[in-house]
Length: 186
Image (cartoon, rainbow, N blue to C red; front, top):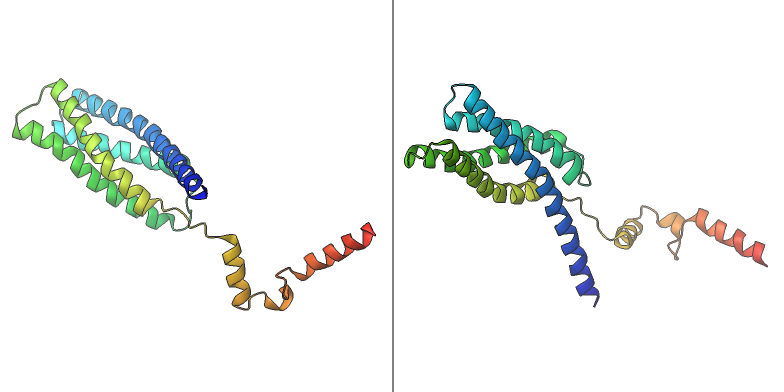
C-alpha cells in the first residue's frame, strides 16, 4: 500500500507542476500571440520575423514565470548556467514553433491573418511539448531530496560526527538534554 501512496503523491506533484507550467505557459501564449499580431499589423515586418520577435518577448516573460512560480522550489545555485540552458532550449523551441509557421506561410502560401494565427498556435503547441520536457529535465532540475536517515548515517559512518554521536547516534547536547529531562521527572 505504501508503494501506491508514493505513486499517488508523485502524480499529485506532477499534476501541480503541469498546472503551474500551463498557467505560466498560457499567459506566455497570450503574450506571444498578442505581440505577434501587434508587431505584424503595426509594422511592415514579414509574418515569420514578427513571430520570432514575439517568441523572444514571450521567452523573457516565461523565464520569469517559470523561475519564480512554477519551479521556485528547485535549486537556485548556478543561475547563469540555468539561464544559459533555458535560452538554449528556448531557441530550439523557437525554431520548432516558427518552423511550423514558416512551412505554412512559405510552403503552402497560407498567409492570411487567420491562417497565420492558427499555425502560430499549432507551432506553439508542438514546441511546448519539447519545452516542458527540456525545462524540467535539464533547466529547472529537482534538488535530490535523499533520505535524511541515510544522510545522517553516511555522515556518521564517514567519521564526521562519530566522536560526539556515540553508539546511539544522538549528539552530546541532545543526550545531556534527555538526561536533564529524565532527572526532572523523577
